[in-house]
Every structure is written in structure tokens, then in C-alpha cells.
Amino acid sequence: MSTIRLLLADDQALVRGALSALLSLEPDLEVVVEVGAGDEVVPAALEHHPDVALLDVEMPGMDGIAATAALRAAAPDTRVLIVTTFGRPGYLRRALQAGASGFVVKDTPAAQLADAVRRVHAGLRVVDPALATDSLVAGESPLTARETDVLRAARDGSSVATIAARLFLSEGTVRNHLSSAIGKTGATNRAEAVIAADGNGWL
Amino acid sequence: MSTIRLLLADDQALVRGALSALLSLEPDLEVVVEVGAGDEVVPAALEHHPDVALLDVEMPGMDGIAATAALRAAAPDTRVLIVTTFGRPGYLRRALQAGASGFVVKDTPAAQLADAVRRVHAGLRVVDPALATDSLVAGESPLTARETDVLRAARDGSSVATIAARLFLSEGTVRNHLSSAIGKTGATNRAEAVIAADGNGWL
DNA sequence: ACCTCCCCATGACAAGTGTCAGGGCGCGGT
DNA sequence: ACCGCGCCCTGACACTTGTCATGGGGAGGT
Image (cartoon, rainbow over the protein chains, first blue to last red):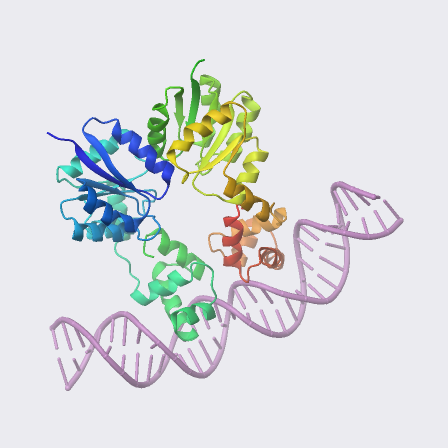
């Protein structure tokens, strides 16, 4: 049986190189290509035909979730394993919806990573069990599209006026959306709502 | 000449293991102990006498800066190389003040890490050049102790009343400190001030 | 002794924010 | 045809927030 060919995507070069070194210790695994941005994933996959792609969620250009969807469409034979820092419940759900076969957070023991890769390659699903339950309780985002937009625009501390200008809305509308989002997130406050929604991976 | 003995501290097990694998590829480097929390650094160092300690800044328990200071006091022969995700200017300055010999961000090429370790071991200082200039322009925190406290308490989106209660201050005083911090950070707004100060590593 | 800076506080005003009731438009499902 | 829901808007009200003037107390430097 031949080796499992891997694509590695992470924006931090040091982590990327380190993971590559770690995985290369396994005789049945081989890193065939490394990239540092989401939009390099598909071209690299088309050129090197990896069996499994390890993607970080936080990346410049295109994030790991979008890259997953793009990769599934362009190279359906390549399975996707998400490897990320943050165990945001929403990330897991969205990653699986986008077609990922596995989801591992970066504080799982190093020894398990190679196993996860092999399982994904074998067609199994790999999901952090603790995270899976969190994902169920947190569920899907209760926010409407517009509420999400407005909240996202509020992340940098912008005022209502600025948000309204950026989204071409009236200030009153922005405040209504914010108020509604605050209610849905159980916050009392714009800043709290942003933190809550972001923590659940809803933004 | 014998090998350089390394201590590795990072809260993400996967990254820790991966860095260990990467460094172990170098014949002159040897990872003798790995820890996942800041307060485990000193005990581990006392037991294993590493030549160089690689510390992450963001860690549970004690952060990498505090761990650096503690390590310098407890084991002066061990040199410290900070390896961190965020190139916050304030981090660099505070790390060097705490006695670190080097400062590397995680998106530097993997090949350079081993070099950085060797230089630190040789007694040289290793500092990301781009970061060094940023650190100069950003400089030291202009915030007073109290302003820092208040801003830190405001990070989670708390209201003035909550902050005041938590810090045993009057609401008016909290607002004065906030207003002053907003002015100093060039923000127009509490949320912006938090982001700006945090981005500079002042919190 | 004096000055400066930080700390804490008060009171008052203007601006920004969160909430609510109301109404119009469009879309999809019963 | 009707209803529910998301979206956009208005106007009004109460509350929070940011700013400013002002003042007292303490620590440190000249």
C-alpha cells in the first residue's frame, strides 16, 4: 500500500513546518505540498492530488471553511481534515456542512493527529467528542443574515453611524438589528453580543 | 560539543508536539521536556536544566512573560526564546525587559527557528526586525495603572456600573479613566480603545 | 516648599445607544 | 388569499456613555 499524500494549509509558517515535520515522522504519511493562504489550497490540490488536506480555519484570503467547500467542488477525491486553534461550536458545524471529514483542535495530543489523518483517509469521520456536544447545545446561529452583517461590522468598535454608512442603511435600522441581535445572544450590550456571537463562531 | 537541551512550553499540545518534531530533526538540538502551562515552566527547568527555553506568550496559569521573569530568577543559566502567535509590540518590549534573549513570531519560516535557538544559546539576541521597529514606534504604554485596570475590565463588554463595582470605584471615576484612555489611544470609543490597547500589548 | 502627576470623586451636559411601537415591501408556504 | 418572517424605515423615550470643569489627597522630584 502506498503512502497517504497530504496537503498542509496554515498561515503560520512555523506551525506549518512543525506539523510537516511531525507528520513526516510517520512512514505511511507524506506531505506533498504546503500553503499559507486559503486561496492557494485549490490550485495546490489540483497540481499535487493529495489524499487528505489539513486546513486551518483562520487564514488570510479565504478561510478554512470556504476553502473546504471549494476543495470539495474542485477535487472531490481529496478529503478534508480541519485543524484549528479555536473550538468554536459554529466552526465545527459549518465545517461539516462544507464537506469536511474531520475536525481536530490544536490542543489534542500530537500522537493522535496521525491517527486522525489515517481515519479520514479511510473514509471515517473524526470529530472531537467534547466539541461535538458543545456544538449541539450551541446549535445553529439564531441570527438573521442582516443581524450577522451588522454585528460583524460592529466588531471593530464602530459607532452606529459608521456601521450605517458602511452598510448603506439608516441608523435606526442598524440599531434595530443590533437590538435584536443583543436579545438573541442573551447580551445586554453591543460589545457582549459581539463577543458571544464570535465565540460561537456565528460571525 | 554536546547537544543544546531545550524546554518547550506551549498550551496547544499539537503545536508543542509538532515543534518538538521539527527541532528534533536537527542533530545538535534535543527537546528534554515539554510543558503546557506557564506555571510548569520553572519546576520543569529546575529538574531538567535546559540550555534554552522556548516559551509561548499565551498560556494558561502564568503567561510567557511572567514565566520568563520567574525562569530568569530561578535558573539564570537557561536562556529564553519567546515564540508567539501575536507580534504585539508591547509583548516584545515586556519580554525583553523580563529577560528574554529572543523573540520570534510563529509566521517566520520554519527553517529559521533552529538558527534562532542556536543564536540564543550562543548568547546573542534574536529579534524579528520588522517587529523591533513597530515596537519602537508604539513604545511603552501611555496608560496609567488605573486606566489599564479599567480598560482590562472593559474587555468583556461590561457596563460602567459593572466595572465600577468590580474595581470598587465610583461610576464617575471609571468614566474619567475610560475617557482618558480613549484619548490616549486615539480612539473615539471604549471598544476601539480596548482593541487598540490590546493590539499593542498594553493590557 | 513647590510643582507635577496620578488617583478618586462630584455634577452637569451632549452625544450615543438600546428599546419599543408603528408601518411598508417582498418572499415562501398553507 | 392569507400568514409569517425577514428586511427596511421612522419617531420617540429612557438610559448609558464620553467629556469637561472642579476639587481634594498622596507620592515623588527640584
